[in-house]
Length: 205
Image 1 (cartoon, rainbow, N blue to C red):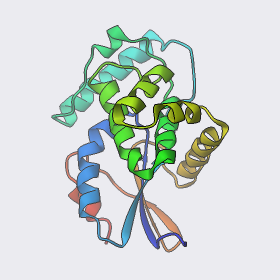
Image 2 (image 1 turned 90 degrees about the vertical axis):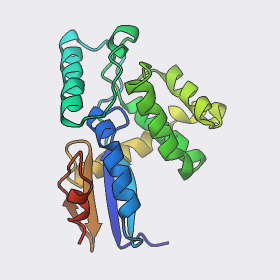
Image 3 (image 1 turned 135 degrees about the vertical axis):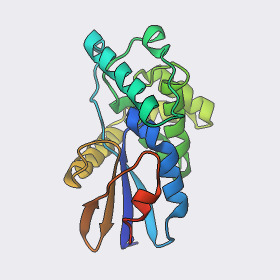
Image 4 (image 1 turned 180 degrees about the vertical axis):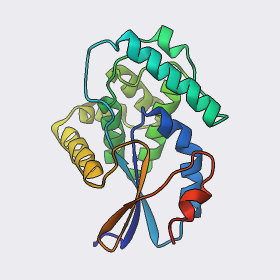
């Protein structure tokens, strides 16, 4: 089957706080798309695997980003207990692989897994950088947790994430979230508004 003529590619990371803030607007955009314009998620991979504790300075920076988002995008929830309850690491690739592992069971599991990761991280003060958290989320979401655990760090899933990161960069998506309109062989980055889906919809023609 040939790819659709027009795609709207959403480049994201499930542990990107700005992606969490953009979630309601992205949902509104998807619901308003014309039938011929196909939405597609693409994982950008914010931070590679690491077992190193997140430096205190970086923790303060990210906490500041959360506070800034709450001011700029009212209604975006964050549970700051995360910084006391968990051992933060700058490592989002495990969560990205979790999305791919969920998708392998069925494309219908992709969005529920993304939401589960975001809610765990931002609202429940759980750490999706940890493998055990991701397997727990798969089980809670209704996935086959044993299969998920086997797929999570497998070579095919790691390769799939590398491919998505490479494609995201080739499309010019240097920050997350990004929206890229693909049509007639060309890629066009769209301007975003975190409170108004109409800003994106107006650029679709």
